[in-house]
Length: 68
Image (cartoon, rainbow, N blue to C red; front, side, top):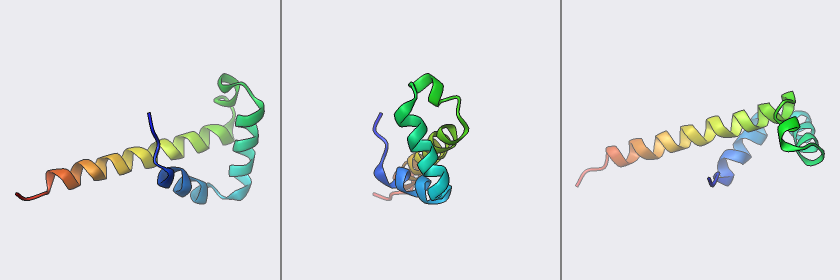
């Protein structure tokens, strides 16, 4: 799955620098399964996923409203 950079960027802005830095450190030093158990990493991943789904729904809505 490809995640748009815009979703990651917006999630990073919403989380703030402290939570983002903590999440990145957790993801870098932990195995993925352990990282998914930590609050900051989970928060970052959840936020990116939410924004990705929102953007995906927006794309689908835009396509359905096109006129020919």
